Amino acid sequence: MSRMQEDIQYAGSDTRPPMLDRTDFESWQQRIRLYCLGKDNGENIMKSIKEGPFQMGTVSDVITGGTEGAVQQGPVRARVLNDLSAEEKERYKADIRATNILLQGIPKDIYSLINHYTDAKDIWEKSVDRHHSGSIGR
Image 1 (spheres, rainbow, N blue to C red):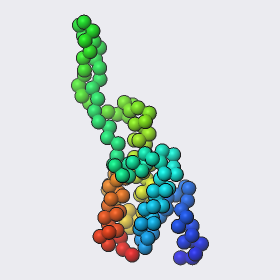
Image 2 (cartoon, rainbow, N blue to C red):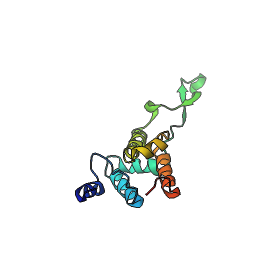
Image 3 (cartoon, rainbow, N blue to C red):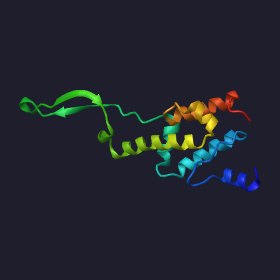
Image 4 (cartoon, rainbow, N blue to C red):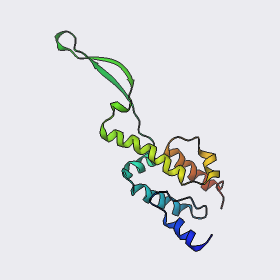
């Protein structure tokens, strides 16, 4: 690889995440972290990588009050996007963004080994596991 290509790969880009360099995994991890933090909603993107995806949870809708104004709860159901607050929606969107960033920063052969993982935390951990077990190669 030419020196200019190495410099470009090392510096990264604002439009594409840094590609995993198999000879310097720790540097790639740091550059991915900085790339994520530099994006809108970067703190939530990193939270998705470290803690896993936002959990929607459940909700019970309020049914009109019964006699004497008593509040009645409807059946418990899974929350959907419309049930989320603005902050929760930002966290939900960050999960998708984090997954995309990591998958774009991994070479095709590694991608084919981990593409069945759907959240950034699993992708991150499996990349780390594969590197430390030696299956990513050097």
